[in-house]
Image (cartoon, helix red, strand yellow):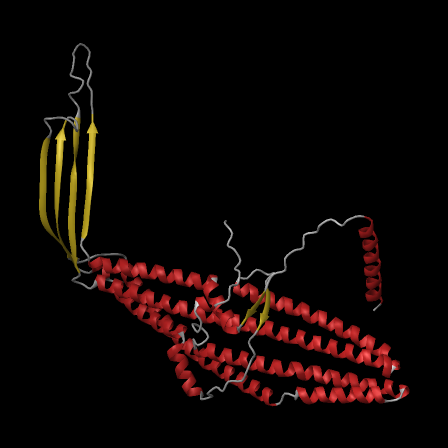
Length: 469
């Protein structure tokens, strides 16, 4: 309190000095920094911004694009291969021998021409088909990876939003407490001056709590801004009010939904299929192969490219290339590769089973969290009754004689604390309920949080610029 008084005195003294200096000479123009505009943001908009701006989502989508290209490359294995090229070779040799003269251009020689070939593979052993199946499976895995990443990003954004919303609600509650104490303090100066010093102390404590709440709100908003890649100086006002939504508690149906909807579960199944294809591909290098094609070459031969006596040589043909492996000794490499592929398949199956068990455990924990949150909502105190009790206690204190007013001050303080707790308990209960509900939906793999809004519906929110490295 002394520090506050000292700071106020210094501020008054400083203002008087500045005022007298301003009277003596004109004050120079001072540029005032423009305050950033307040951005109103709903939960759905925050999720959309996080998903659309996330580096993790972009990274997963690039992996998906790579998988698309690799699948196209694998399909190109069925297409004919055409090669066309130009060749040119100019040589010049000279000979010298004592006492004998030679034509200096006798060793000049040029050879050049056009070469072309066309070959068409015939997939007699299914090697190309397995390569396409492998690439297609990898593409499907990358698709699920994008969906799983988007769910993770959305879930993180929801939690960051709820943290910031809780902090915002605490600031609002503390602001109301400060305002109520100020109103009571103004009335006490005329009706109960004996409690005025005590109320001034309470006001200082309430203002200190408000400062702490604002600091916590700034930190919580910074976490949300980081998730949304917003500049930290952006001012946010969160507009979504948390409500209670009924959720089916049939764990068996929810487990089936999780096993069919979760992208990571689908990925696990695809990895088993991928391992099975890899197991069959181990011996592809020793399977029979067949290709049909032709070639045509035309060469020009002479002493130089501009030599009128140059000759043309044409060469063309059609061929069938058949490879039929009979026996090969590799020191046991093929057997070990088969064993490796078999172990990788076993591991893929075990990973899928482990994930299924973890989904069941996570689902049980998520359902318990929803049940606890629902029970908390049903038991929250009535904030209107708490506020009415506070007003009654204040009126009794102000109406009491000066000696009794001080003894009633503790009841007012307790009533104010109960009202403040009721204000935040209701908001906290609904926030915790929705947090548990979001966790349950993430456990199931529900994508309702993604895709409700389009990019054009989102507010114009600045994005942190990407620097050059």
